[in-house]
Structure formats: C-alpha cells, structure tokens
Length: 571
Image (tube, rainbow, N blue to C red; front, side, top):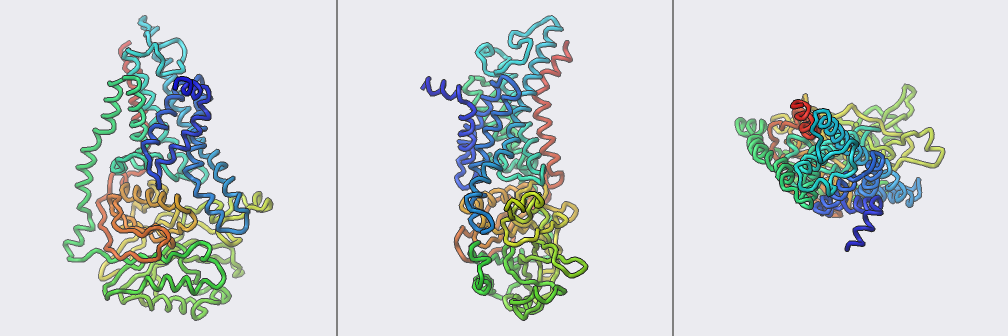
C-alpha cells in the first residue's frame, strides 16, 4: 500500500486525470456523488502541495480533462445521427472540447493556490515586522498546507480551512465564467453532485459547488485530524439549512396559488406528448406521415376539459405562418399554412392551447431564404397563432457553424441537417396566453437553454412555469438524465415548475421544489396527463440571480483573508 501511494505521488497529474474521470460519475445517470467528493479531496490535496502556480494550474487542468471527457461523452452520440462528417469524429470532439473546458478547473486551482500562498507570505511578513515570527510560516510561500511541521498547531486550522475556502470561492467564479465565455457551456455544474439542492434558492447552481467542496474538504481535515477545521466546514454546510428550509416553506404559498384560491380556478391541465421518434427517423424520407401519426395518437383528448397540449422541440416540419413562398408549403396538409393549422386543430378541444416546436424561416428583400429560427409556436383551437418564441442560446456546431469561413472548407458541418445557420432570438421571454377564462404565462426555454443558471426567466414578466421542449434523441443514455437534473435545479432556483416535452424521453413534470411529479422514460411512446404544479413566490435567487453566487464566492474568499486582516489590525 505504501508503494502504491508513493507511485501515485510521483504521477499525480496522471492520477488526477483518472480521478477527474471518476468524479464525473457523480452526475446522472450514475449519481455516485461520494466518488466525486473523494476525487475533489485528492485534487485539493495535490494542488495545495504544488510547488508553483503553474503546477497548480496543470493539476487542475488534468483533473478537468478527465472530468469533462467522461461527463460529456454523450456529445459523441450526437455524431451518429448525421452524415456530413465521419462518426468517429465525435470521439475526437469529446476530449478536444474537454481540453478547453479543463481550463476552468485549472484556473480555480491556480487561484486557490495563489491566494493561499500570498496570504501565507503576507502573514509571515507581518509577523516579522511585528517582531513575533510565526513558527508555522516561512519567508516565502510554502508548497504544502499539510506538511508535518504544521501538525498540532493552530496554524493548520487557519491554513487548511482557508485553502478550502479559497478553492470553493474560485471554483464558483470559474464555473460562472464557463457559462458565458465564448457563448458559454455550463453543462454539469459541480453543485449538482451536492445532495442539498435546496440551497440553490439563494446561491444558485454555481454556489452549490462550494458546499460540495466543503464536504470534500472535511475528508481532508479528518485525515489531518483537524477537528476545528471540520467544525468550521460543517457549520458552513449546516447553518444555512434551517433558514433556507423556513424560507422555502414560506415560498410554497405562491402568488398563483392565492389567485387560484380567490378566483376558484383549477390548475391548468397538461397533456405532454412523447412520440418516441428517433433522430434517425425524424428526417428520413417518407417518415413525415408516420411521425405525425405518433404525435396525433398521443394527443387526442380524453375528456372535454381545456388543456395545454405540449409537443417537443421541432415536433413538425410544417410551416404554420402565412407569407412564405409557395415552395415551402409543398408536401404539407393543404399545401398552405392554413391547411397545416387546420390539421392540428382536429386534435384539440375547444379551449385547448397547443405549443409545438417548428422552424420559422427568414428571407431577404429578394425573397431568398437566408436563415431559420428554432421556435415554439402557440396556437389556439381555432388555428390562430397567439405567439412565437425563438431560441436565443443556440448550440455551437449543432445549430450554427462557428467560424464557418474557416471550418467549412475543411469539411466541418453543423450537426442539424441543412446548410443555413439558425438565427438566435432575443432571449428569455414569457408568452402571456389566454386560457380557460384567464391568462397563463409560459416561460420558454428550448432544449440547451435550460442549462444556463440565472438566464432562463424574463424577470420583468415572471411566468407561471417554464416550458422546456427539447430533442433529447441526440444525447443517448447519459445526456438526457443530465438534462433532467439541470432542469430540476432551474425549478429550485427560480421557484417555478418546469415541464419538459421530448420526442424520445425523458419528458417530465417537475414542481417548484425540483421534485419529478410525473415522467416518461427514454425509448417509450406515450403521454403525460397532469395538472400544472403551482409556482412559489420568487426565491432570493429568482430576484438577484448569479449576483448572489458571485457574492457568495467573494464572501468565502474574504473569510479566508480575515485572519490576515486581523493580524494587520493588531500589529
């Protein structure tokens, strides 16, 4: 065993590459989050011992490469559903993307190392200037927070715990950066692995990472027999629980619940359709009629009550808007927008509303097609279009080819069939729709948009729920469960129900506490008939967004610097 530990110490970068991969098993569908904590503890241990900031960055980067390669393996599956590029390219794309994403854990590791060593150096300088040199510090930054010369002294509490606080604060900041640099890719934030998701109501998904890191830090401090440090980190985790729980109980009586009780209205009825249309069949010649039949069979009303009929992203290939050149209406019902809308109304009761995914087209002044929009269209039972939402956060290389001028000559293409890029919409939007004698406010987030914490709701026009139509057929057995896990966090953060409709699963109704009320698993054709869960009053995070996450990160770093500030005060 001693020789094994010695071998790992000599090859810690390789070991962290493997540990990073193991850490990704804490995400869905495996949810082995204790392994994530163990791997984080190893990462912090070796970063704390790094002899330089460059070494700390490289260790964090190696961990990130493994972490994102395993966690994002579903990206390779998407390449099996297109013919423009070789399928094997998907297995090259996954580690290549990981090489970039790993920069962010690397920056977190470097930031924690730099803060800890800078604080340690300044502490030493202040001690010498005051004439009381500390036995636990040296005249230059030390490479280890767990060295034997610190054991048994109060300084181990300050340094070990302080490093963990620095690491937590830096991780929050770098995950937030990952969510917006180069349009952002915030898939699988570390906080998902923390079992106390309720804290997301005030610190958001990125802030949850601090609690996961604190749990991992407790393991390190237990090994160091640093019980004071354990108590500090345990307090960080446990103290917010009771006020958060009490506040959460207060939010359960939301403003819509009051409206429903006062007006005697019932919650809206939902029919969510999952036709189980595979990505291979979706665009196959001659499958349009088969695919529509699957949608129709699961959409027919079972009673006369008005309902929200919810279909997935890009559910139908028809053009529902008038005014396009005739050639774009060929091969659809009536060879017109009106004919297509009439076909859809046959599936609806009077009073029903249909929200379906369609592609809307953009033309130049010469009536030439120049772009498309990935949209959701709301239509009533008379065939009248009540509103549209255009997806704003498009998937790079999925819905548009970034750097097209460079990559297209090299043979690269977007994954979604077609040569034209999709155009982005204006951002989060609430559709205010008439329904059953009242208004229902639908917050729209198509597919990938739901992963961006703090960016899913129009805060000036708060919806009653978030509708997340998606096409999870691209993502295989790992991507779809991870989508659901992130949608649950959005529900908790915003205090809003989230409803998902997908062609192949996982479709779900999620309440404002993140609980899955009903769902359909992958690979099953069917429908969900349910009542729309009620929203809560806006949570703290719903009011202030990621400002709270970043403020929490700053607070952790400031708390780590507090001992240094106290020394300066009492010089």
